[in-house]
Length: 229
Image (cartoon, rainbow, N blue to C red):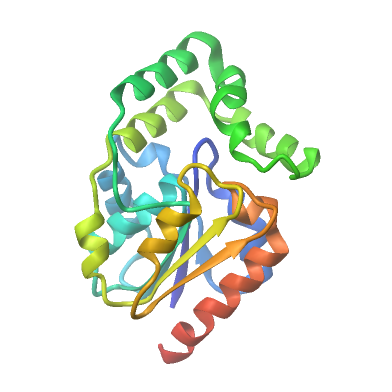
């Protein structure tokens, strides 16, 4: 069984390096922005890259949306979905989408980082973590991040699919997350074959802000799934 880690905006697969190392399991963390213009295209690109092996798909934020799309595209191949600071429903906001794209294209990633992504970290998260995350964001070209922003805002609503999903679905949220609030993911991850975990003193990017807690939660949550394979 292979783990697939799908990253958040405005990062790439490198955001998962420490988690993959801590788990010590076979895993891949593709960079999504170059796989197409939509999250559905990203999902097919991910599946093309991983082959036919059974998967546990872990996604943070827009990566969570992609994880749901991967499961929708290949339900028999996906053994479990892990959503981190993500949700299935979509409330489209084209004004916010266009504002973010204009910010990126006019003022660059630095300005967009301070406007949109830095505030998603908990205030208590260390400056070193935030500085490292900023450096990952700044490594991208604007066009790639714009493509990610557009794909995120134009994604389809997968609430019905998520409600029908009958294999394990694990939700992990930071208690200070605002995009979405933990209550959204708690609702989705409550029920048969589902579990929800709330991580204290943590914002949107749980694996970056509270890595030890996140890695322990993830390892314990996927252990029975891996053992059954």
